[in-house]
Amino acid sequence: MPAEIGGRFPAGQNLLIDADDTLWENNIYFERAIADLISFINHHEYRPDEVRHVLYDVERENIRRHGYGMHSFANALVICFEKLSAEPVTPELHATIKNIAFKIADHPMEFLPAVPETLADLSLRHRLFMVTKGHITEQMGKVERSGLSEYFTAIEVVAEKDEATYRGVVEKFGLVPDITWMIGNSPKSDINPALEAGLHAVFVPHDNTWMLERDELRRHESDGRLLQVKSFAALSEIF
Image 1 (cartoon, helix red, strand yellow):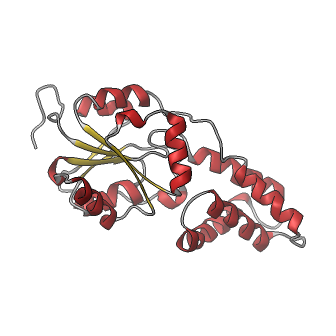
Image 2 (image 1 turned 90 degrees about the horizontal axis):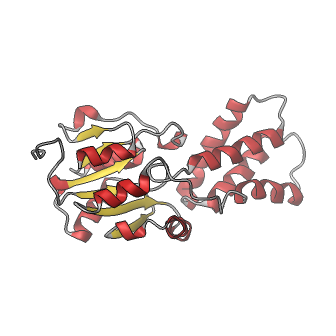
């Protein structure tokens, strides 16, 4: 698929774009809640990194059972607290831990640099699809607060991002894989499964990507279909 003179790919590409930590900050708010939990536990036996290790294990299991979203996260904090607390876990303590989680539910939308103007520019030449995973009500609430929906042909909130999900999106919208790109910060959810589905991908690194979304980029399997940029704004130079 040749690029135009000047380095851009031809107009008419299908750009599937992740939301959390690609368009706006997300994980930093969860990290603050985790820091509050660690401070609240104030454990003398476990180091902060050990508390996080326990929490990540709990989250993995919790996601399998309950999916993503604030309720799942709050439940994971409570279970982690129960595993590590040196004192009896009372209903009052349960409520306190859940409040640590839910106080981040309505955090302000903090765009990553140049996101709105980059979307506006890309939408002039290409079809944009937001593909984000999580609790549909929570994710659509973020979309509404962001004011970015006007730039997207469609918004897809999915339970998980895997090869089958991307093949489903391609089929649903009648997309041609050779001109379809998944753009995001997560190797685990955005990049590797999109490549497995036969799409192209653009990795946009984020310094605070959630631990459970980190993975090795499968460059050796990409067959030239994987690009990496330093920032979201750089997409305008490619597309």
